[in-house]
Amino acid sequence: MTSKDPFVKINNVTKSFKGLVALDNVSFCVEKAEILGVIGPNGAGKTTLFNLISGFSTPDTGSILFEGKNLTSLKPHQISKLGIARTFQIVKPMKNLNVLENVMMGPLAHSCSLKEAETKAQNILELLGIPDKSLFLSENLSLPEKKRLEVARALATCPKVLLLDEVMAGLRPNEVDRMVSILKEINKQTGLTILLIEHAMRAVMACCHRIVVLNYGKKIAEDTPKEIAKHPEVIRSYLGQDPC
Image 1 (cartoon, one colour):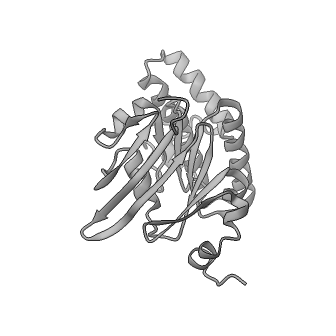
Image 2 (tube, helix red, strand yellow):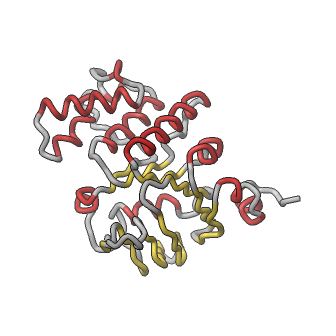
C-alpha cells in the first residue's frame, strides 16, 4: 500500500442471488481513521456489502482491496487476521460462556496470555459500559447489552477496520448517544476505521464523517452528513418524501 492508496477500496462490486441483484456495480473508498456510514432502506444491499468485505460471501464481479491487498478470494478468518472485524444484526455470543470469557476469545486468538486477555477484555467492557456484567452468562443479557457485547467481542480482536451492522438497533435514545460517544472516542484515540450500517439517523449524522447511500443495490449518493440530509434522491428513496 502506498500513501496514495485508499485504506479500503470497493471497486465495481456486483452480487446477485438467484437472479436478484443485491449490489449493482458499487464503488467507493474508505480512508484510514474515517467513520463511514452506509445507509439505505431495507433490502438496499447493506449487509450483503459487509458480507463481501468480511469474506462471508464473494462478489460476482469487482474487487475489494484493504491496504492494497485483494480480499476477494480470502476466507473470513484470513480477513480477520488482516485486521477487519465485524458485528452481526443477529447477535451471536457464545451462550455457554460468561461476558468476560466471550470478550477474552479475541485476545487469546492473537496469542495473548490468559492474564493479558483478561485485562484487555475487562478494559473493553469498561469502555462499553458493561463491566458489572462480566460474570453474567451472555444469554442472560438484555438486547442492548448483547449489542454492546457484540461490539466488545469485535474490538477485542484489535482490528484496523470495524464493520458495525446495526449495533444501535433496539437501544434507547440515551443509549444511542452513549454508543455514538464511545465510537467517536475510540476513533479519536486509536484511529480505528469504522464502517457503520445504521437506521438510527441521529447516530449516523452525529458519528460519521461521510455517508454512502444504497438503494436497490445501487449507490445513489456519497457525501458528508450535511449534504446527504438535503440530497433530493436520498430524501425520495430513504426518507420517503419528495424534496420541497
